[in-house]
Image (cartoon, rainbow over all chains, first blue to last red; front, top):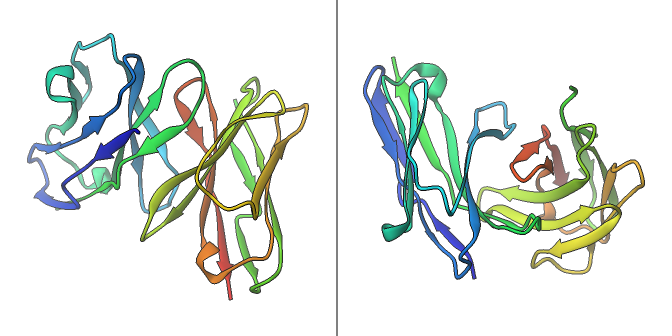
Length: 115
Length: 109
């Protein structure tokens, strides 16, 4: 069975601080996808990134970066120089590959950025 | 491109009633997934449809059902509503990353 663990329930940081959101996953599949989504107070889930299991390259997109390590089954997300607009709940998710979209979500990490 | 749309956005129903929620995916997307989000259980997968066929189903009772039409629009039905069905129901269309709609907030009284 697939499982995604986001051990950090809530994090508070002061604006401009860097923050890392942890994600640990479990799967028996050798091919899978990992995702991060953002859910702002408005409620709509926003897709941030997809990574497939064969691509362990880290990725940077502006202030966002992701560190994927298969050896530790982790897919961590770092926000550099956090801003108030980053305040949201962030979900890590996992799905098997092959086109079948049964996605398992973590419980989410609520990030509060204090001005 | 228009995003995923869900109707209605808010709904209040009484225990024992049934409800139908609608989702229109992004144009060209053929896969539609449904999720239930509650404070206690988080985001839970309900089912996924592709080309009018249910390909995957989560661990929900048979009161939860869905269907997809030839234009990829999907509906989700919950019969015999229970108080615990109060939740945000999210629909997503996918590529494989999923693009979510704004959700339907269902309150069962």
